[in-house]
Picture 1: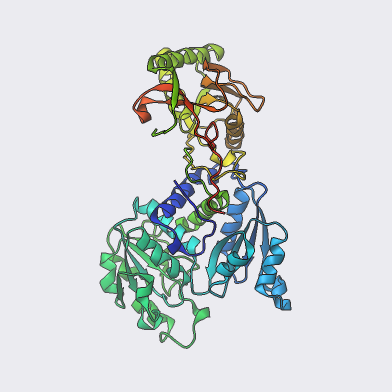
Picture 2: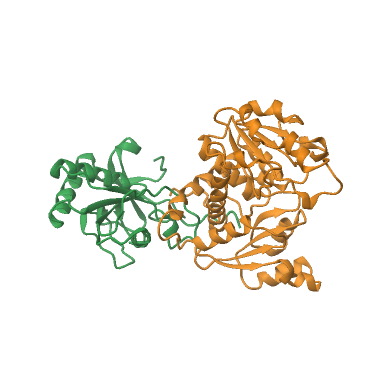
Length: 314
Length: 198
């Protein structure tokens, strides 16, 4: 095991071995999360700043839980309470924070590229918790983890990513990550919700016909319709979207018997995903994904802050 | 183990290891007046295999299956901040340790830091009635006030030597060997961080 990363910003900088190391480490954090004292002293004395400049529920709370269970001290920072509203530049804000001798910044921002900029000016470990429409690497890792736990293996699986590809930063990390791990990826979306160059993400197939794609898939990954990011009207109305691209009860019969359903949350019930599928006891692994969020974020913090361990004989 | 370091001497062969494990099993049973309320917890990655051997012996002697678990101490090490993130192995203690007499099992007792970490890890899992320590080899050089209750063999060693247990199950041969440490590496299981990532 030679994990040699300081930042988690761009998933394409990680090899299949690096990703497997994170997933294996995450799996070993399960026993910590399932016992009475859900805490280990590993990151005692480390300070992590959670800089969320955009709303977030599960990413922010699971990072915070991960930090607390590793005994790191965390500082929550961002939004309208920060000096940026007083006109301070991002670089000045980061340099100010770094003067407190922190060890890691977890950042979510509405602009793509902010995590990289922070990494360049701060000198501390940076984890991208979602930047604009660019990437969301820990989301991709928790998705891989959940699929890996459910299916036992990643290589060779056929994964369909369905919905709002154009506005999705989840896709920006998930599709490359699936390709790194040897999956076959089909993107299903209305033409108006595809990026200008869907091939750049690396999907093997691109289609706008959900019913044709579904019977081939081992994993159906439904994306959230991001109404807050739309300009114009990419589809006539939500009901029509549900009819054409929603995973409805009627579409259940098109799925392979062992196909599973993922969603990064929060779900728009009745739009991209019907409650029947979201709560399906056999197919839905959505709550497993939420739990995996804590596990992979603990693993990422552990591996990134532990530094290099090249050439050790454990 | 494809260890490039030089083997200086073999201090226990397969038969000696077998006899030591048998003796320790008897001593554990004698000290605890039987196997009742006893549990074995081995520290990965060699102590868990020794604990399994001890459990088999105790089964042979007393006809009792004692609960057997394994413990990974990666999250409790005291050198995380200064060295590296150690590879994490699984902890598997599927029984309730509350109120039990837990015998911690490790291969080589050296600085005592591993045992300190293991005690902390154990206390976060439950509240044993008592914790005892069984090791196959005690090589001295303690840095903490820790001693073993059951020792296979005392092996005097220098701090620039490494004492390692090999077991047939994973290494193809069973032996305890004294190895010369390569320059730049540290004795025990925590070599100096190769500072390539900063």
